[in-house]
Length: 170
Figure 1 (spheres, one colour):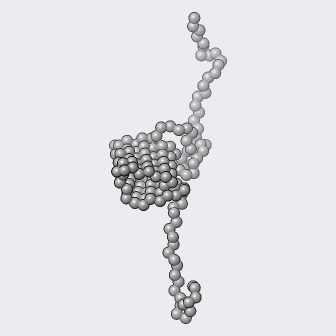
Figure 2 (figure 1 turned 180 degrees about the vertical axis):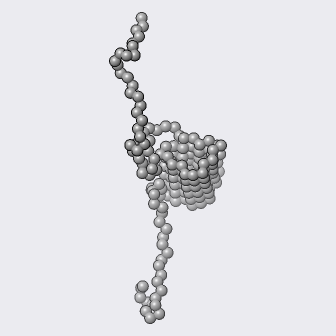
Figure 3 (figure 1 turned 90 degrees about the vertical axis):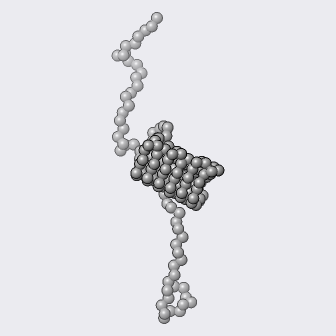
């Protein structure tokens, strides 16, 4: 009827998972964190959590609590009860709660419950009816680029000496 195999008999066995030191893992220079080996569900920061400091991940994050610092992620969802005071940088940003600070993302979506006080730099944007937004919107091909948009320098004016001819460029 049934046959039992002995544990000591040779056969395919799964190898125990080996610890890989963090220094040998590939690093992503953008975030200075180990590159993810596989995708998992988003990390969740609950409504009763307050973080003072920056959050950086290559994964996805859903924030329901309060953050006082910058947030960098692959995909960031700001929950209805959440407040972020700082800069957000993510490939995809979904805002349902409150953000006070600049938002940079390839895809940015403000839902009807969103409140954003700050500038938005995006490649594509969607703003639902009812969303509250105070700031400027700027479209860029690469909003995640490390360099900020350079500000135009004020024209330089040099004063001519009294002895020089004012009509010449200085």
